[in-house]
Length: 206
Image (tube, rainbow, N blue to C red; front, side, top):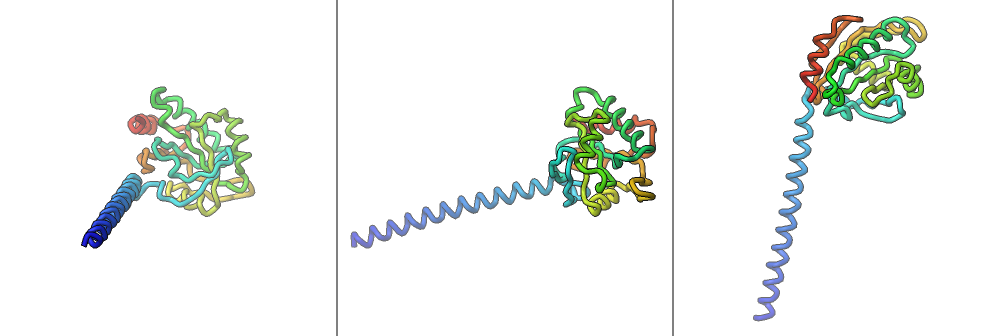
């Protein structure tokens, strides 16, 4: 009888440890599920961070758009061999950056996406950033595949077409995205009044 009592106690203890272990695993699973759900909820349906595209920076680093989360993103599509509109778009971006208050500058990322990935290699983008004195971390230059570039241009409502070797016609649009990747403002044209763009950036920046 005493022997049977010991066996009963051991079985009960094993069952207790098993239940505790399962409870811990269940708790971990629930926590992981909640974390995953929170991450998914953090990115709205219309966010550019849902795009699966991959990009290469001027420093040769591979990134996804979602890596830009947490900052206000000011973005424009250009190509480095452009001699007409693109230099003016670069000047517009520089002018916008200068007018953002000093205490908000670290919360804003300025991004140039190439519409000519074949020519605009990371090395070329790096040289372009140096030529335009845009080597600080706040300036980011990206190139992707032709397919990813086309898809992203469609999201931004940017039209572009190759009209001759190394020459493109394209829309002149600067887009502003909030910290979760939703578009909140667009500025179209060259050398236009950018007060609304700057106001949108300032309002969003922490």
